[in-house]
Image (cartoon, rainbow, N blue to C red):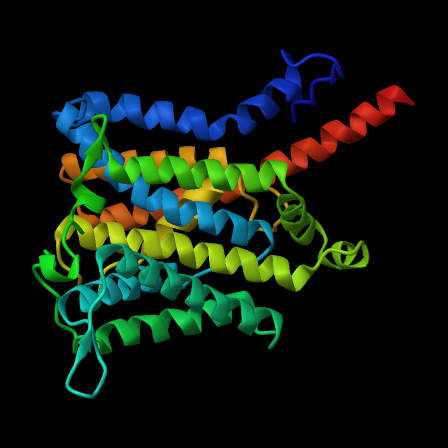
Length: 354
């Protein structure tokens, strides 16, 4: 068996340091690779129209992945985001078409800004329920969010008896028109959904890298008991990450309903898989304590380019699901390899310094 090359602590051009550098850049390398492949393999992949469509798809996955990143960093998981997408889309559709029946012969209607705020509040509320189940009732994150997955999806179906809320153009008299602009509008030639992604991404990156809350999120994922002993409000941190994840899912529900000018209760099914894949591919450790928002967004681009490229090549949706599963497995395997290599490098550097 070939022996391991001796480490040069100050260099990165030979042996393990170069391999470690490549592992850290794996998401960016993967993005370049899939982009180059589909540029040749898929017809019209480089067209402007495809870029616009693909950017909208990437934005939807990136929103969910950003929220998922915070959750996974704390050592948790949120399986309910796809169902929250469907529920929030149905809430927006219901409010636009029906308002709220007050039971006295009158219905209360809202303008489009109020409808958006109410829908976002619903997403945050479901996230808060996840947080309470996990922090107060000590339910495992997997079980808690699996339960809310079914509850949210059931409520979405009950809101319309499984039917679609169509033609969400609104009513000028109630100020509920213009909903379509959220998903189909553009500013300076860039879709509104991309501007929203930029805003949410920058806010999340700022929280993660520049605030005490961000440091506490990493501390909880790194060692929850040690974080609690050092004064970190662990339960508050967990409540925040699940509420933020619900908020991101609500944005996706609004954008999709706006794009379609309709709401369907099945919207968002399996979206949680894409979000987890993007976060893990972007370098977020499933064991908690490590992850970057920038890496997650690049991971979302990889998943988005991969999905759209496979569709343009005519690959079956069944095979697309298989490929995404393999991507998640490969990302976790590579992440574990990186952690082992980092530990080995640290030990060799300590030995060299001694």
